[in-house]
Length: 225
Image (cartoon, rainbow, N blue to C red):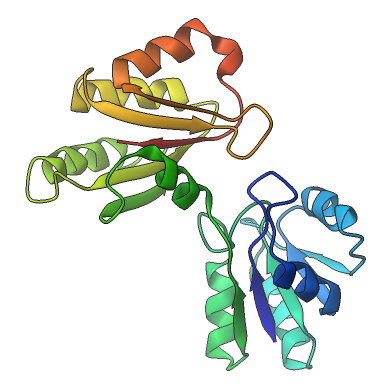
């Protein structure tokens, strides 16, 4: 049986009792980075064999995990943070398990974008989640399609993206170019961590803030506009 277990975004206490119980009972745990997952597992005194599986893992690693599952092993699937399958490399493995008639059981909790959206004050009934934007290829095409989308019947929907510390300034500048400086935006960084911070300003105000306080450009960002 394959368990898809949601883990905390960053705060180690943001986990369900069912998730901890599942991790204590499975035969092994597949995770992106054993060192990162080890922090959470040690916190809850969970000692299980760890199987490394990340975006660069090939078919050999997938076949190995599938073989273990078909042999009757129970394996939990966790990501470095939040719910597996959301901006994580789990899709191929989960799809393969389903094709092999292996039972897949989700152990639900939160994701970063739903948590941020909940506090954004923006439209929540209709939103478009895009994850991380393309770095180069199709980036301009995507922005143009979003402008067109915003200018038609879908103008009221909130667009949600993730951004890294390395590209947040560039992305804010691009948003300013495509959607104008006075367009309202919400940016949340360090979600659930000690110094979490969110800004409900115009694009230009948020851009000025991060350009003038480079010490705040840390961690990953959730951007909503």
